[in-house]
Length: 292
Image (cartoon, rainbow, N blue to C red; front, side):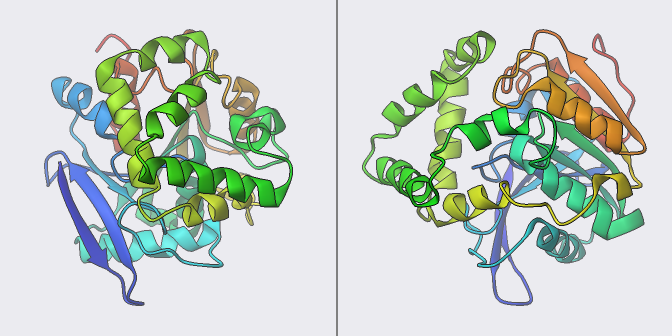
């Protein structure tokens, strides 16, 4: 994995991490909420073991990791950052892959960047607030119903990261997961990965998480029915953080879409498995099956 930062035309920094052959089809990964550029690292080993021909590039969104916070931004502002970053990296066309809270960012890129986005992948993705199941997601139902208290909750998480009490936060978070995800989190390498995600997400404090958490409670600013790109969705039937009906709602409304339902997976259990390799391969334009 190669990590670096780009300086955008307006002076903001954009942190990124990338891996894979430099001449392979590019998959731009949109991390979850909260998250960072390091999120797809759990899938890297299995993607490489299965010889998936893809160059995966993940960016920190504003205020996470190494990216400068940007006040007043919306989901539809992200495509401009991705277009400028792609220009700087010499990339003409690319696919986008959004996981969990990265879903609206990936879909916004497909809408705004037109033919520059070759295809879209959404895995365990959230929908707009009106989508079936969204009020029951961990993203909406987990934090307090009072806005000021939600901000305080994120501040307390950031403080725990800063004072080396992150493990207690992770332990409490794991209690909200399904059985299959809890079992995955018992693996030392997965827990270490999850710990890194929290650390990077709150490297600059709680501002990004507190701000972005409110975006998911507002209209997205676009209609998913207007997306023209080929879109593949994957979702675990045992996902209690984002229930399966949300993925079905998206698949019913995105014109050129296909939903794959994983009967035994939750929100995280797919990430270091062959399913992750299939997700990256299909999003990059290679058709693979579960046994390949």
